[in-house]
Amino acid sequence: MMILRLSLLLLIMRLPPLPTLPVFEAVARLNSFSRAAEELRISQSAVSHRIKQLEDYLGEPLFVRAGRRLSVTAEGQRYLQEITPALGQIEQASEHLRGEDRTHLRLAVFSSFAVRWLIPRLPDLHRRHPTINLMLEMDDGSPSLSNRVADCFITTSARKRGYTAELLYAERLFPICSRKYWDWMRRDLRQAGLTTTDTPNQIEASWLQRYPLLSASSILGQPGEDWRFWLSIAGCPIQSSTRVHHFSHMLMAHAAARHHQGVALSNDYMLDPADDADLVALPADTIPTGDEFLIAYKTSRRNEPGLRQLKGWLIQQAIRSGLKH
Image (cartoon, rainbow, N blue to C red):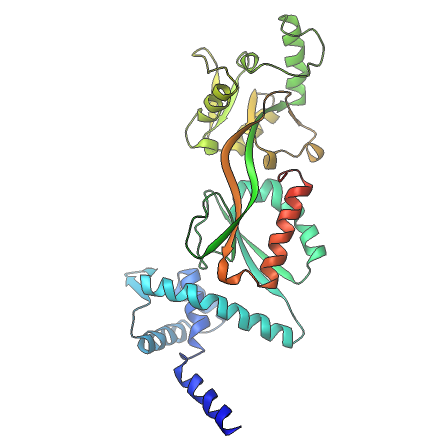
């Protein structure tokens, strides 16, 4: 017993001042002393004192202060990534012992993916895994892989040492329009002698250039590039006479299509035919973009129950909704 107590004492002596660690994590995550103080319900001076205490113990600066701006040093960023999993495990163990047993997870995700696909499905997550407390961190671009940002990521860029990534969805593009516009297109195609039936089973890519094309630069990064790509792969390069209306985001191109302004391109997660009576996928080619949406997380955290449950649920939902084949 005496040896055990001595070992514990030596371990405690090697540890940093434990009250400083959650303060450091909060300041680094929020990038603000004042916001960390508000979250932790302590004074800003107490936050400053504990950060200084930790920096003195480590012998390294954790933050760079330039006027009112605050940034984490390279050493601080590395330290944050290494201690965050341990803090999470301590929190989970404590909640389990207290009978609370809740898992708090931050999921970083594209805003369009969250709005159109993920959020409508969250009630199912809450029913199946009521102990998961999920916070969404939404981003217009591919989120950076860092514990400072989130615990789990849906991203198209997951090549980072120490992270594991699993395929969720291989993106495909197909043309859509409003049901009212499709009714008009069918009549127009038949009057032009391009089809012999009221509802063609397949329409040629070249026929779409008779109508305004609604382009979203967020798809492939450049105005009009989505339609140039799709038409080229479909064997019909875009013509100089083709009318193309430009939008910065697929959400806006979809809104224009919903208001009968032309034909837009969509991917699978942006259009749910079972839940959208206004838009229809046209009987035309579906073309892969080459982009893959991945579920990424730190390899060292792969066995955490909450992360495993969230990852499993996301993959299950992707299969059920037809995203993952």
